[in-house]
Image 1 (cartoon, rainbow, N blue to C red):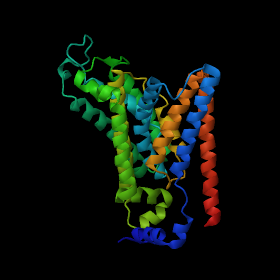
Image 2: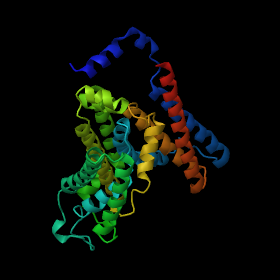
Image 3: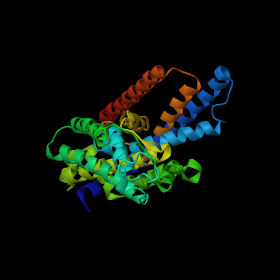
Image 4: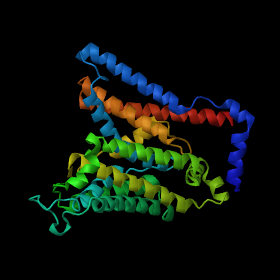
Length: 347
């Protein structure tokens, strides 16, 4: 058993620690989600004369939109827990989508990009998209660990480059005409397939982060890199893994998105990275690293989706929606900083 294992075991077994355990943060975040939903329900009856929660088509749209951002946010959560950041997610969505889409076209479509790559089994474009996303994540991790440049700069560079590749790949032309088999990835189960994929991904990485050595190492690096290194963790190798997995999830989100809307465009994915970061921060993930859970991020994504849908439902102008969303992100970060300061004072 390593020094890190012994330390964490002592903390968990300490009676004083057990006494100080409080209600999980996810419960508080869930209560916020319920409160926001009820607020929009009341405002809906007052200003619109309709129910916000009882409209199943609206709820379906909310959950479908949340699914794509949520898949990305799970990867971003792991990155933030290590003390890093990923600004490239939205652009990597576009790059993965554009490249993979050319492998998903049907020969019956009049504007085929590559005639030799038509009518392929659905797993071919799926694997292409996952590979492109994973490679982008690997490059991010490699740049951060090998050149020692800040994650902000490395992923900012990837954000610009990936968007350029997306536009260059088909000269800016959108790609459509997917095979029915590939389109099922976003439309099967009466259009609920993206939600199913999101839930499966969330469960997998909840288990990974909470019960495996990979998750333990991820938290350790974010909480105290020096202690993690002394404990024998190969920080560089682990960070590359985390960024690669985050990129892989971005690629998966891109495949789900284009299969659902049945087209890929170079401009897609704009602001996805900020929405994913917002979902993680609202869900209780600390930008200082070392704290946060996948469950919180899932609820944070739902809060974001409900808010945006609620604003639209109340016919609030899109400009005001962005202002409010930005303010909520800032407030969430302020609250996180206050928590960090309190912990420092008590230690």
